Image 1: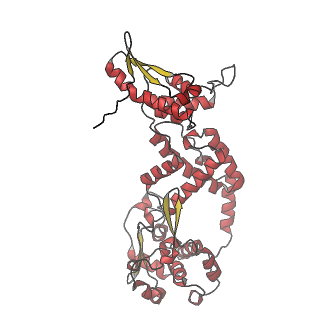
Image 2 (image 1 turned 90 degrees about the vertical axis):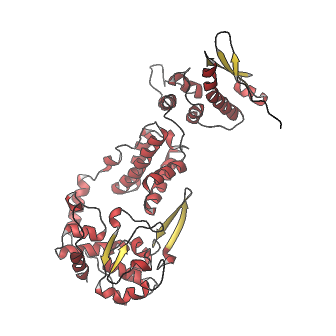
Image 3 (image 1 turned 135 degrees about the vertical axis):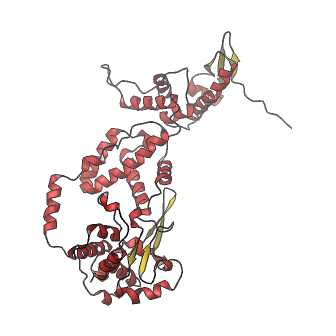
Length: 415
């Protein structure tokens, strides 16, 4: 067996040890020296402990010299902690061309301050890696196990933000980037939609800061700055005073023109979300109720979405053929897209236009129609929330069990 000689980086000096490594010939002109030298400590054990970080730093220098460039932050993290340097010195070593100050008056350079923060995290062993967009999304998904539509929202939000900043890693983004992006969103969309985008990003940055062990939470508190204004509240109150109806253009029994008519009829008499109906399985349809359950193939919006809904008497003939099969009733309504390496499954997202064309209502309108009727019939608001799969509007609303006889009465009142 042939044994290869292991490189030795430790050299005994007069009263201490030194770390040394030769610079490859093709890198010497870029590095500006033929050999790297660093203090190794007073004892051999200290020297051995410092070798891994020394090798990592010099490996990184070799990569840079050969054109395999990476950011200064990545360089610091790959170097690891070094007791012989202060965070400021490490930051200067990692990016010698970045001045700590912007002018002769001592105005701090934000780029250097960000780098200094990374160096501090490295020295305190808190910074482990700079997450890519995909790394961040994966970490957040594992933490939260979101519904498909929520994950899709995260992906679109961070991709749009990173494209706006022009930066390669989330960690490189600054509070100024976040504020500028908020202002840009307000030019392109409603205040509520902009707030949703910022809320997605705020959640992602919570995971980013926790996983990387440092850095600023640039979106902290930013969604709250887009709370509804008095003007918008007044406009909404004014709209609420106007009489709104959610009625179909024809009787539900007369709908035709699609093989998914039964989906629209179930929406009409249950007030469910489109995905909840489109992803139903034969086993979810029982003699007098349907079950909305979580599954790996059909996630739900919230935990409150899990519920049983009584079947309206008019649906008996509609559901009878649906319960005879096995598995998903409408597998053709399943769509799969790959977003940042993750398969995102959605149900029924292609039915919005056919639904509007055939019934005169959008899928969401069926929920508004049901809730409006139940309120008009003076049913309890808490029961309406539970039947429609909404989160409780107050702590008190979350107490108590299901009132099944009332649910049956509520569904039976729908016309």
